[in-house]
Image: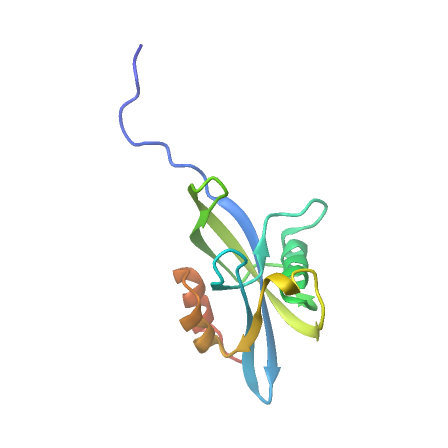
Length: 147
C-alpha cells in the first residue's frame, strides 16, 4: 500500500457569522462588546448559520440573543477574520467569521443570554484593546465616523 507524501491536508475553516453592533452618542461612535460564556473574554455576538436565515439574519439573531440589541443589519459583511475556536472535545479548529454591521435602534433590558454575559458600549479603539482576535482588532481600529 502506498501513502501520499507531502503536505498534510488542511481542514477547511468552520464558518460563523457575527454582528458588530454600533451607535453614535453625542457625536461619538461606540461599539458593543459582550463577554463569552466560557472564558469571559470580550467578543462580538457571533454564531453558526441558523436554519432558514441568511448569514446577515444569523448575525442579527446572535446580537439579540447574546447582547439584547436590535437594529438594521447590513446585507453584506464588512470584513472577515479568523480565530482558533475551542470545541467541546478540547480540540481547536480554525474558524472564519464574517462580520456584519448592526446599527442599533433598540437595547433591551432583558434578553435570552442576559444571565450568561455582560455587555458594554465603548469606542472602537478601546474595544480593540479588549479583544484578542487580531483580525477583529484591525477591524475595530479601522472604524470611524463618515463625514
